Amino acid sequence: MTALDDIDTLALKAGDKRTWHRFVAASASLVHAVTRRVMAAHGGTADDALDAAQDVYVRLVANERRLVQGFDPARASLATWLAVVGRSCAIDHLRRRRQPTSALEDVPEAAMAVEGRHVERLNIPTGLLTDRQALVLKLLYDRDMDVADAARFLNVDAQTVRSTHHKAMLRLREHFDVEDRAGRG
Image (cartoon, rainbow, N blue to C red; front, top):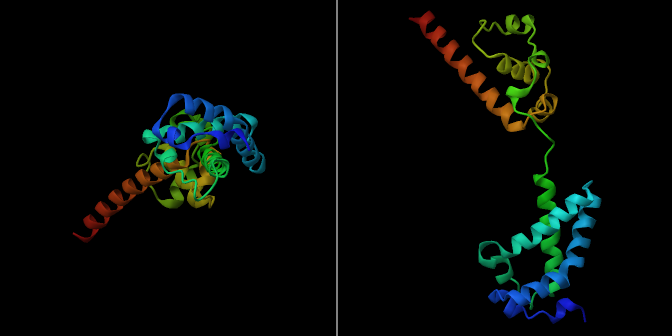
């Protein structure tokens, strides 16, 4: 019988502080072991494992202990249930972990130099797009990069690349739609 088996789950669900403290003390080694194992299998660090272990306890008490309230001893032991919660938190932690990024505005202009042939080849009037918008289009269309590759290249978040691309496309559509309507009129 483990210390977790001695935890009064009804008191834990009710939010009893002493029971919570006993639960944390009894479960810490299991939670850390589970998060370490998941992190080791997926390239996470020891610090990631500690962060994920802390996330387990935060998740357990979130929304008025909703997750704890859902524990059903008829379906699994407290240790098994906690291992599942720990694994889930570790995987979620890995999903949230991102490569360090910079704001597109912080990328040096030299790294974003747009070649004149690019603008000419697309027949985009000078000044219609910002240099950043033109660079994003060049990476996506001239170099056939996907959004994730362009984001890594620029050291920015993928959503920044998508947003910049979207804004550039809106400008192009507006410009060429007006030009097309003027030619037909």
